[in-house]
Length: 483
Image 1: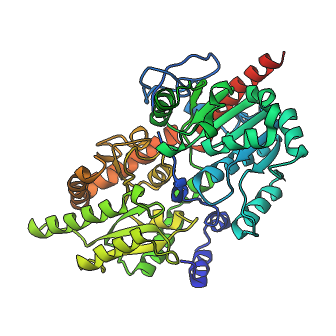
Image 2 (image 1 turned 90 degrees about the horizontal axis):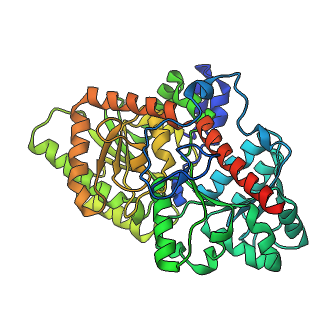
Image 3 (image 1 turned 60 degrees about the vertical axis):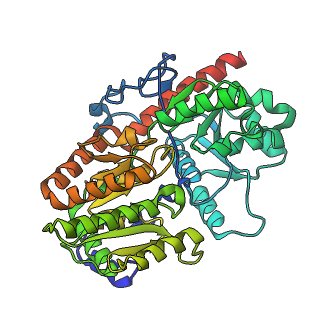
């Protein structure tokens, strides 16, 4: 799909040139994720926030409406909800600068703030000693958009932190920067810190990372499940209390939505990707789009896929050939886990039905070419799982684990089906694969319902509104503290 002939063919079809640029921008935050994020519960305590934001003890009613309406969201005349940030100085501190979800999401926020004229400064706490192509590329992308890039250490970093109207720490690990750089100045900065947390794994709950967490203005987390997990874990394991916590679901970028809603673009991408995989147009593709790791569940997905092939054969079901595609492989590293996956494929003699694709930032072509997304993250699941709402934008049903943020995105039985995590989920997932393979109308209806849900709740303007409510609240707290 990187072939020159593909782009020539696309250009001949005259679909918007903007789409060509887009394909180099999309982040499989997923490879992330974290490269992915993780998930929680709620109860409103702040007058400045909507019912989708503040969490405490009560379970969040996901379908309740935010204070802003979709009419406002889609109105071209509506002002940008972040306009109030124009005169503000914002310092963004990331633990690293990489193609993983956390840094890319913070960069996205940086560009949203720059879009309204805010003065944005970026600090990366941990950078490789030697020149790194990814870091170089991402830093220059920020510089091109007017984001100032500053060294993590030194007096200038301290001065900016003290002067800034708002400091956003990205991920729990970024907390190490506070003591390492600010030292005795830490208490002066904490009242204006918003801590954006994406992690869901136990090893991030270390005192050296989060000891200042109770004293910041607020914590922002991507899902209610994750927020509840952090509240309980910090209290039980570390004996500390979470600050006021805001849950902000993510949204799809306008650029991705343009591609998802362009039928000509999707058709051409579908043709070229399938041709590169050796898959016919009428065949069905079930794909998992995540970095290849045990926590993302590719091994269990392949077991389910193999079991579904057996079910189809045993029941003599009349379905098109089905394929499994794993996007997020690392052809160079060939980790032990990936070797296990490939050996399983060879052992079961299903190499003509399973396709490995190297990890990539351009996930849109694959979403345009597949029929069903499988979100099979294990244990506590994804903090949010942005690839899920990206797939739904392409009108794809989602088969996901009943864990983490996936439960806050997928409406079970309407936009897809949920199955248990771990080995208990192998057979249920296999059955769900067969059900979607044998019922075309159900597959298409679920895809349309997922698209409608994205339009209602998971667009960039939705995310901007939610973040704006949080930033206003945090800025007010910082102002009150300073006076």
